[in-house]
Length: 291
Image (cartoon, rainbow, N blue to C red; front, top):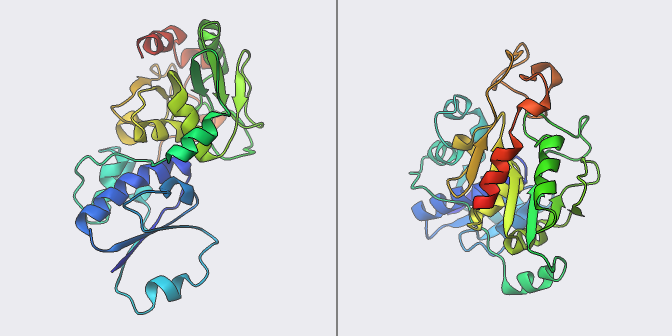
């Protein structure tokens, strides 16, 4: 039987989906698992995945994988499940149960070859230990490059960088359309290269974006900051998860539909008087020093 697993969403969601692949293969060890997503390189070398294809690169897909075969199709979106909307459980449990499988605590997994590690490591060699920071997420060229609901406030991030800059080479994962931090080295590279960078780092300060999922998959403890999303839904106990301070004003939820906040950071919904109230830089620094 061919089991077709379609994943709609970003890079972080695809990394999470590797745990679902484990659950599927546990239930169907002798069947073929074909994954279709926007980021097939996440599934490279994964022994649980027989084929990984990108959207738009599925010519002859029906003929090869469906016509004349017994199939099982998993293409539903777990974000639309009531358990996820109510934040009753971790997304991985919701996702696995939605397809009719038992969730046994499967974790994301990534498989990099020694050749990849050797090749990409030459890009990031450093005399000082490496401290990786990711402050912003989301799609390229958003209307607002900073989202209060997800991103690390600039002032807080800069205080953290200033604390560590003399002891570490602070590497800032960011695109050109995202805010830059002083005393950092900017990096934007392919996904597999970024995984090697994370493996080479000694400390990591992250948000709810692809890097925290990748670090969980590679068992790299990190400090992860949370605002609108919940670590109980999207996070991992591998990390030190720091929740935002309590709101200082009542949020405006007139536009809220299935979730209280727009993850892109709608200014109307901002539940603080200023970004300075969201996190205490000292708490983040303390957690990083213990890492």
